[in-house]
Image (cartoon, rainbow, N blue to C red):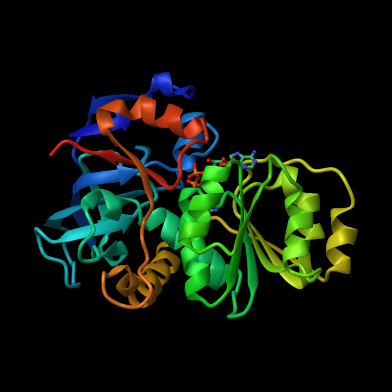
Amino acid sequence: MIAVHFDKPGGPENLYLKEVAKPSPGEGEVLLKVAASALNRADLLQRQGQYAPPPGASNILGLEASGHVAELGAGCQGPWRVGDPAMVLLSGGGQAQYVTVPAELLMPIPAGLTMCQAAAIPEAWLTAFQLLHLVGNVQAGDSVLIHAGASGVGTAAIQLARMAGATPLVTAGSQEKLQIAEKLGAAAGFNYKEEDFSEATLKFTKGAGVNLILDCIGGSYWEKNVNCLALDGHWVLYGLLGGAVISGPLFSKLLFKRGSLITSLLRPRDKKYKQMLVKAFTEQILPHFSTEGPQRLLPVLDRVYPVAEIQEAHEYMETNKNVGKIVLELPQ
Ligand SMILES: NC(=O)c1ccc[n+]([C@@H]2O[C@H](COP(=O)([O-])OP(=O)(O)OC[C@H]3O[C@@H](n4cnc5c(N)ncnc54)[C@H](OP(=O)(O)O)[C@@H]3O)[C@@H](O)[C@H]2O)c1
């Protein structure tokens, strides 16, 4: 089969398509014929040699995919049959024509969604769902500050925060991104390049600050984050786009807010945790992607690339221009 490959860590120019062995499903696993996958920041880091796959995971890039069940491994007890459409959360291996995955991590594709839309769901939406509910313990009436509001994770988090009865506020680096975030449900958006988002957040919340911050930026935002965190607020750190090193009185500022700083990484979580997450998401959230019902959830797609243009797709993500997900189509 064809898979995205690189021989040595470095820039996007190192990526190419390689003929590799097709995997076989092990005990309790399913072989998925991949129609589409999507790009994640983790792919960029892995390509640069900064994010090794967890033990036992494929070293092929790709944390999510959509496609059809091609084969069932021994002992597969669940409802899945050969030919069924499905989308999956992966620890790696999605940017290939076939991938194996524990059967419990498959999710049905909501009616009316294309394979490309489905490929844009697993990583971003499961991350956003996990951060809001399992890690951040969001409550109806809370205010939630979502950084990188137009990112794959951000566009999902805005919609899920609204669904939870919370008030999402966002930061982003352009007016266009803020407008899209507001269309998705953000109550307000702040361009971090033009204004102090911390002061703007305090003004919006009438001095109270936000109950929850979803922070994939880290270093460059720490002081502003703690400044606009409400008393007893939760600050969830799940990425380091703004760096990992800080200098200053983080502990005293956090202590005087009685704030909780919590970190989260989904990819290295064990199978049991991911099964629980996929089950909760499938039951509680997937039905809301349907065209019926009062509040429809939508995966936001920026661009679709044929997988042969994998270098261009990485270069594009590195420009920070995408709103929502960058999707890769696999040859059928
Ligand atoms: N911990 C986990 O389990 C987990 C899971 C999935 C993703 N993530 C993390 O979540 C983050 C978002 O992922 P994604 O795939 O949704 O990203 P994405 O769609 O590529 O969007 C990332 C956006 O972040 C903004 N950004 C980049 N560098 C920045 C900086 N230094 N300061 C402020 N904003 C910056 C840019 O938008 P602007 O134009 O607004 O600057 C960029 O477009 C990444 O850090 C990723 O590693 C973590």
